[in-house]
Length: 122
Image (cartoon, rainbow, N blue to C red; front, side, top):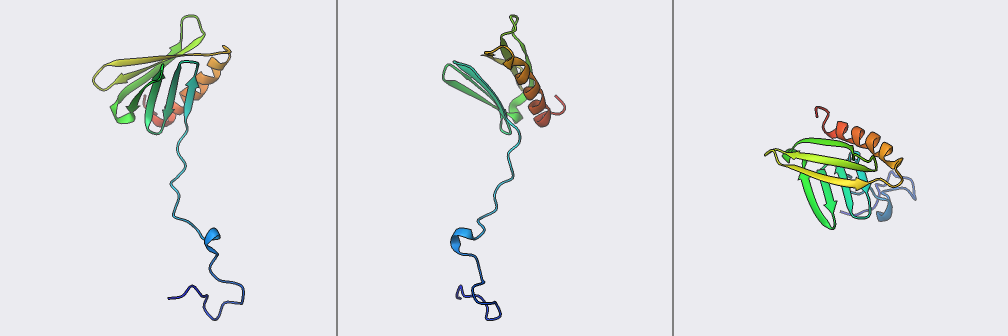
């Protein structure tokens, strides 16, 4: 079989050159993501679950292992506190400092939306 266009195709027309040919189907766009990060810690919420990084130690919590996710401001209002309740009842927490403090308000709004996307029932 040749890559030549059929005889009924006008000259100069035919299959696209390899660099323009359609590739394999691309996966659908990933869902929303949340990221809060400071000098030492971070919280990531995405399609795979929740991840905490604390002083270079990363802990991943896939959605199937999570009973619930909770968050609040620290008592001094300068940090985001996120807790993951594991299916077995254990609770894991990560604290991310918000500098400037106004960043915390944006984190709350974005985190609420992302958690609602992945966990609409809580």
